[in-house]
Image (cartoon, rainbow, N blue to C red; front, side, top):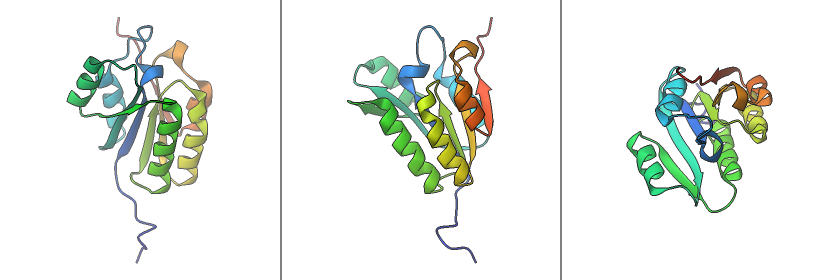
Amino acid sequence: MSSAREESFDGVGLFVDGPNMLRDEFDVDLDDIREAAAETGRLATTRLYVDEHATPGLIQAAEARGFEVIVTSGDVDVKLAVDAARFAVEHRGDTLAIASRDTDFKPVLEVANNSGLRTLAIAPGKHGRSDALRNAATESITLEDEE
């Protein structure tokens, strides 16, 4: 018999660093990020983190695509990191996916790995990819421009 602490839920927790992923230079679409994460399993949590400068159009588009939008007045990275680490240690899913190019999330992936979760680093493109994130994750996906 397993204890409640040992129980885990199936599914992928997708945490998207909006300011780092949704730049014009990368031409990344929220649907592409969502599809990349969904390839590893059922999406249990899909969150897009943005700062107070996010446009209402972006927020509306993200919500229409099934994202829970988290707007922060401070540093997006801190809120995302805390929420993703909580997802991992509370075993709210079996996979933690972080879409970013920011190496600040490497410790979050390590916490998730140490908690027994599969981890996925999603990068916006080859020139926007963080090798530290890619190497810390058990799997990685680099979104490519369709030409």
